[in-house]
Length: 81
Image (cartoon, rainbow, N blue to C red; front, side, top):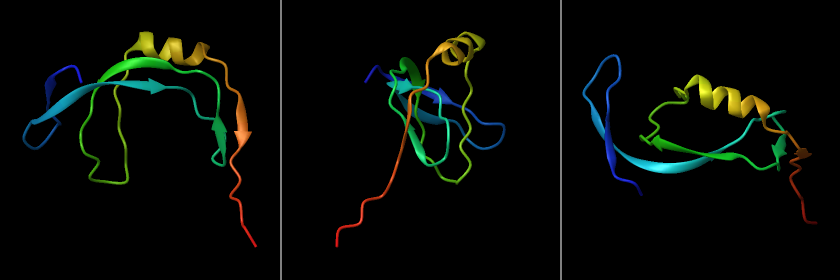
């Protein structure tokens, strides 16, 4: 962990969130997994209290993310009989 940061939404009180290094990479299809390498981004991480996830990324991170290769494999569920 790299310390903490105060996160403030449009409404509500600010929260103290830990700073962590997160590996991000593009996602392709809903039932597939990208097995290509991602890259590390230092982020403030807050508890998820809804099914909607918002993230704010800089234009530099967006550009880097768009340059990453995508190597998707099908994510199939195994059924043992």
